[in-house]
Length: 385
Ligand SMILES: Cc1cc2nc3c(=O)[nH]c(=O)nc-3n(C[C@H](O)[C@H](O)[C@H](O)COP(=O)(O)OP(=O)(O)OC[C@H]3O[C@@H](n4cnc5c(N)ncnc54)[C@H](O)[C@@H]3O)c2cc1C
Image (tube, rainbow, N blue to C red; front, side, top):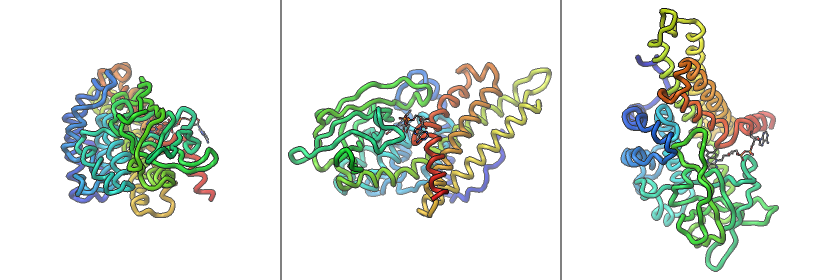
């Protein structure tokens, strides 16, 4: 049985069609593969190819490079629908579409766009974006990876960690210091992963997001030409900051999706499962949980779309609102998926139902893309300014 209609988000007919198309893809193709890619911790190869065919990898890229020319709202729709089936697949697709394609489309030169966008959009090139380092996580500006002038290009040295798609990427967008240790100068470099001096480090075994490979990248005298630099040698910091709001709104949308997916499983189960001669949904304690899960999911969705509108309009306060949406989305995803496991009882704890996977996947939404604590810090700083 369908849920009550979601609130009117003011979607255009084209956006409604996109939602229906991605929902069908997610439920028909992505969901049945989710358990296997989670168990094997493998990249979602089949869904990746289909996502490329549907135009999702290049959703926001300009049409002249093979993109669909859509906006952040459409990418939120894609993220929410995919995450309701499999958060790993949603993360893999959005990482490419926003963090890699989006950055090159917004900040790359015509030559860089021509070189990289067609392959990234048709899925033949897998990209990753590397900020985090073993000693620089929340405090990302303390990164140590250096880029120094070498001949006609640059020489990169350093280690990046926790990089989504790192173990499988063909192209890494790497942030590196272009100034001295005390300077806050960063450059962003498009580094082919077969460049001399580039190596992959460990691939991590994870609690959740297991169908989204995560690993280390090692740059040891990695030589790239001038053509690898996106923007100028000092523009990396501005590029990094410019991408944060949209990334947070997208993570909020994915969080809403995983909460929605868990709620739907819990509702179906509460209707069917009988104890003490009645469907468990008729027990007030279970009904109350379902009501809270629904309420929190809708509240997180509403805040996500409010933040999205603010970010798209580049209006004042968009930074705090994007952080608020990510914070609430992550916390709601964690609570709703945990409650879904509780509603299913012992069946929630085994992998015959997807809710234990949803719960493991949801935890990352409070950590990745800036932790919940860092979001609170950003919101408070903005309010107090
Ligand atoms: C599966 C996965 C995928 C990822 N993908 C990518 C990727 O593609 N690219 C990339 O660059 N990075 C990626 N990351 C890294 C992610 O962004 C970082 O893990 C995150 O920003 C936190 O950094 P950290 O892990 O070093 O934790 P730390 O910064 O060491 O934080 C540890 C704890 O201290 C708290 N803390 C830190 N500073 C403060 C403070 N000022 N006030 C209060 N509390 C504080 C944190 O909230 C946290 O609870 C990924 C991580 C994971 C796990």
